[in-house]
Length: 102
Image 1 (cartoon, rainbow, N blue to C red):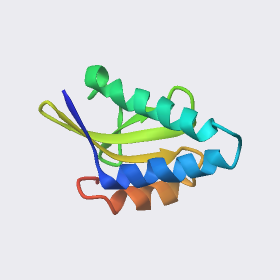
Image 2 (image 1 turned 45 degrees about the vertical axis):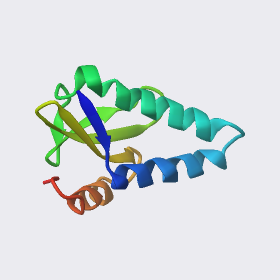
Image 3 (image 1 turned 90 degrees about the vertical axis):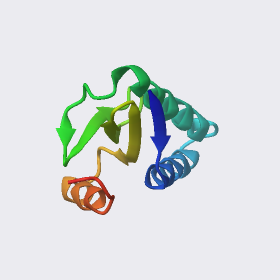
């Protein structure tokens, strides 16, 4: 299984790290380490997560973030990594702007 993190998800990860940088020393690095671990787990578990707005949605184990991805054959495309505390309408609009999402 090959995981591809699209630029849209990379931007989301950077924004999340910036948010946690303001909360405490080293929390941004812990955030990124945790989210990359969750993304890496998709090598084993891709495709088992419920689809929401046309994409599979995996909840991070340590932070309140959803990982939205698509699975095609042996490839996984991480399209967004979003704070699940955001307004659901905002999340829906954000995902619609990403190619391949419903």
